[in-house]
Image (cartoon, rainbow, N blue to C red):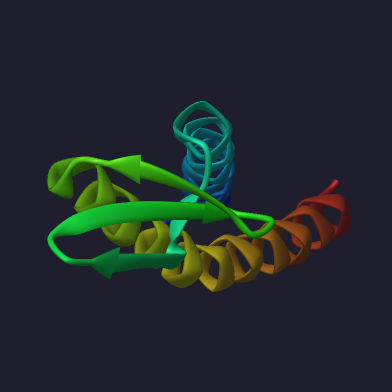
Length: 96
């Protein structure tokens, strides 16, 4: 696979990972917290931010749970892609 294709793949992974993190934090701000520290009590769903609970629907709570899990799993992938991109840039410099 050509070097420029590998570089494009690494950059795409980085961009998608970064956009996902930004989307998560924007959702966190908009919704008033996230489900990782939230709670479910008597059929009511609460997101948490700095100890403040915000009641939300089950669907919003589930969205926050899933998106939070995706961010946790995508961060290491994004950092690996960053390291791969650095490695590829080094290879590109050696070839010129």
